[in-house]
Image (cartoon, rainbow, N blue to C red):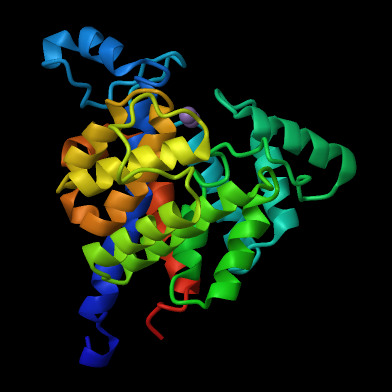
Length: 312
Ligand code: MN
Ligand code: MN
């Protein structure tokens, strides 16, 4: 092969990070779902024979999952990614709303209340934008944002913000959700583009100083993170910044219990982008549903092809 056609090393590492992020999302979801809604104390008790720590993808949990099965967090991300790709690499609110609605029609095993309520409203009105609501500060719009982060890496702020809000506001039209989502996208971009640990921390700290709801650096160890976006993301930041590997980050976050699958999915995307695919424990990748692995890897590649970072 002529040298000019060979992928550059930069492109190669970018793909490893993007695939790591998408696989990390699915792994965090599948791992966390086993202990969703448990308290850390209940987890220590239930996993006493494993040293009091939950660390294998075994299914089960309140949803009675098969080993390797994923939940709404990964399913909605894949639906969004598919909508973006069928729209030719654009985040079109109406296409996103139809994709989420089609997913809801497939009778998913779990679905958030805000997601359900605003998708039903979309069916009635045809308007792919929820009414602004101070109560809709759940984590549902940020748990699924990874496809937008992959697509918009290398783009300018206005484009990033418009793309995020087009998908987010279908179900969550809320300023705290917007702030958390945009912060997470910027952290994912920094990780994908090879930014420093301090660059990621600066983003997370800026969110905390702008919105006091997001206390993570000074706060106590956040246990039982709820579905409230500020609780979820604060727990994710504590786990990410206090660990030094993909595996330890994911084990730390899911053993906090609470909304463990969603916190796990968000932490998994971030840690997967930061540490890259090569540092994901192979036992977790092997345990994951095969068709999910294939779809995550394929979407990561194709979304990156549409991004401004794609090698031309
Ligand atoms: Mn879920
Ligand atoms: Mn959840």
